[in-house]
Image (tube, rainbow, N blue to C red; front, side, top):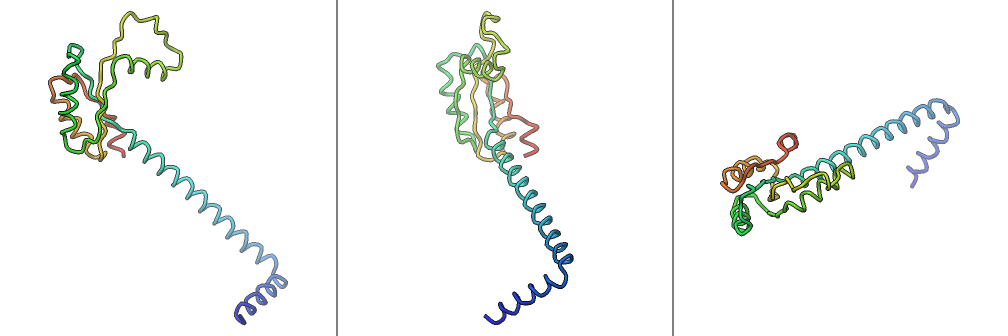
Amino acid sequence: MWTLYYFVREVLSNLRSNPLIVLAAFTTVLVLVLILGMFSIVMLNMDNMAQSLVTDLRVVAYLRDDLPAAQIPAIKQKLMALPHVTRVSLVDKDAALQRLMKRLNGRFDINDITRNPLPDSLEVTVDDPAQMEAVAKKAEAFTEVQKVKYGEAVAHRM
């Protein structure tokens, strides 16, 4: 208890004798704490954005147009059997067109096209972003798959 009393007494004594130096020290510490806080907030937000980008990455396997709908469940099973694959979901042509229209936000009129040009696709979720390229290459080897995309640039950066 005496040490606390001693420190408080010394602080008050120094405040009375050197107010300008105490104010300069206090301001310096305050500015440094604010800079550290801002930096921490920016780093936490960037880390959060990077994590959300990683979880949103998917391998998209575009299926051939002439593929019968009855074969799609078999392809889904083959993709699920690949290592590091956690989920495979079908996005049919109509759902893909609706997504595109929503993304274009009214800049595209559905009446301008006579048929849906988008293919059916399978979205493959991978548990490890480092394995996306390997899963994409294996999916591309399937004869039922026309093309595979997985956001190569973003996946490599992450």
